Image 1 (cartoon, rainbow, N blue to C red):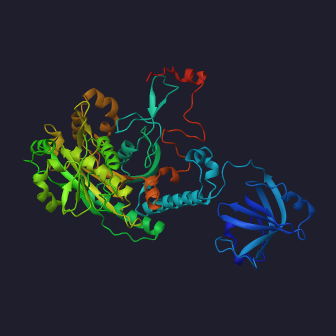
Image 2: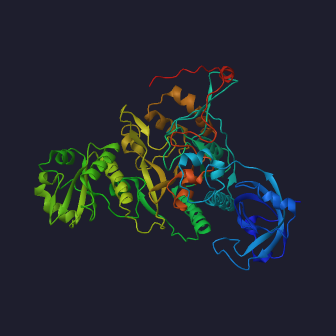
Image 3: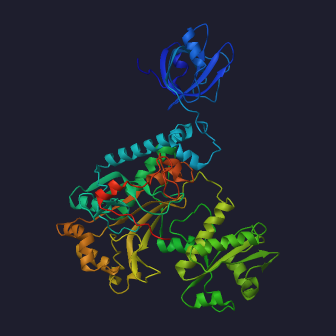
Length: 589
């Protein structure tokens, strides 16, 4: 006989039905004349009642053997709870009077209770992830993830997109992060790479004439993990032919409107706001701005061009900028110790230091106040200073000053919990990114996003002589300060693509070796095309109000890229290494 119902599906409507249930023991109680078991499956928990007057002696004897997490098969009748209705349980109006129980499998005592609000370490949860996933919270998240992906698929099919899989074992090509590489047994000394994204294949599918492609794509990047980044992750990958930027942005907005309605019951406003990269950096010091709180950057360059404080005057008169943010009313809470912490954050983000001052009792004091007393009135007026305000400054090249202040700004917003409506989803497009940036170590140009983005029509003229002035038709979708999707209109002309590759220092031989197959394809009639790739893990994390991707991925890695469940990465046997022709030489660090 097969299971007739899930435990958590039973309601008062099932009164009088004979049911067969399967599940795990949540807990059991012996009240002397009655025995109770809470049985759990993926749909929830139901209470079982073992009555000596109803059950045979064998069933009664089994109760003493049953422990937490034992796997059971149970036959019984659904009856209403005449007393002790539990409003906190989905099945709280009924219980099941047991006729027969089978122990399908025994279980060791688990290292933690299978329940929410655990007070155990993350590492313990990850080591026993299969137990962690039994918890109602994790069960809900995995099912929400499935619903999200299913909704995406339904939307894409409705828009006439074709779902096509692309390979995992590909050629190693530079895309911005380190590749994970896979040695070939059949071609010793040669390697595959795992895809950082399906970038080149989706462009080839446009050349192939499929016009609208998508897939739920697994991607791999050998980067340091952090709260919102894992080494292997999932994204919606899509590409369209014969489109411009607005077509991609409008489609994405339509998708997100459907997703937030289906998943959260929220009617989000479209079209989304738009900021250029330069506007975002100037206002928020970040290309993924947290806009749910103000504290925008204010430019003070003109004020400090002729001041006596050399750090500011040198930056202001030497082509750099002086900018500031104001933390309202927190002067007493910003101790010297805290300000030192903020200074370290600024330094980690490229600043040499972090200048600051307080405004109390109608005048500036502390920090650098004594060096800029002659600018006090201008600061009060420009920054609208009030008693209790703290001002932080950045003085450097435009990008460095903005980056450092932007990082401090985000930290302050989080530390002082300045966002009042945490259930609000702020969505903004960041467009018109610089196509190139300078590598500080080598001084050469590198692609800011990737090599395959079309330059804007008004800056393409600078490609060969002044690459730093070239902007790309690039766009990122940012929600609540997190980058959720990134895309661009792609280059489809082989000669233009070669010029971009040469700008970052690639010669003809390297271009042919790494990208010859793509440029050859472009020779056979590549349509104009573009696309975008929303990150599914990060989107779900934001939707559910979480702070860590590990909570929305079934089997995540730790911050040092370890899988505590399986022990990966692990060593290979000497026989395996010999098969693929690899010797291990451990580097000295």
